[in-house]
Image 1: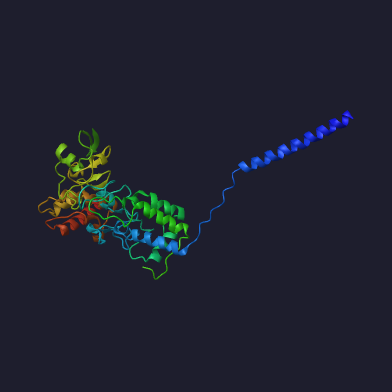
Image 2 (image 1 turned 60 degrees about the vertical axis):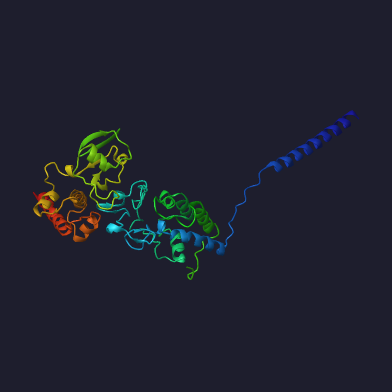
Length: 209
Length: 156
């Protein structure tokens, strides 16, 4: 009789321990962080194009376009006139012979109206990757920016990083005395670039201007 | 104190790092061959070589030249026998002469990089140096002549 009671007690203990173990596992599971779901950005062609049109306005502003000319001479001023002194792009985009960019353009803006603006990276894109903005329609420029063969070998992430963090791009918002700024802040510009890419990096239709 | 090497000689200059290099060269070191023209890098009269590149010393801060090699017109050659100086003499290039040290320093970079420049090469290299007397034709002729002198010298 005593042995039967002992077996009964042991069985009860085992059942109790199993229940306890089960509850512990259930509780532990509830504390586990759910695996991060991969967020797929919602593609939105209209939103993407709208964002790009904002980006386009900045890229076509004098502070950006003057160093992305259609020809081999940089541009100057808000009227995009050809740079004085017959300045040439050169193979590396930094000028030729005794008229290299850094001969006049210092690592920083020179103070005073009509004095040379400056940045350590001052120059045009190189001759083998001209990255022309001047004369490009919104569609043409969007497709060019997305094409690594024509954008300096950049992925979309690198393109965002370039627009948001490159020192020479950032100069456009600190252009020195007497120069107009692009039509929106650098922060807003970078946000529009991100939006354009996140919503699918669509190029505007060919009729958009 | 900013240390710069001008025409091979080291100088320790006690001056504001933002001082134009031109000021240091002319007013502190007394090398007055380099001229002040426009003061905003538009004319080229103040051209000197900074590590071999022809910079406009009127807008180049002294701090940019710290620890670097500067060559002025006085240091283009020790005996005034640089091919350009000889050609300039032969063809009587200067009229008033004010821009000529800058012209020579720019031309020296061109000839170093292109031993036989065409008229187009000369225009590309020299358009940033303005001459109020309009000696451009003689400058071009003298650069061609200097190229010739240089090549003949190389053959000897």
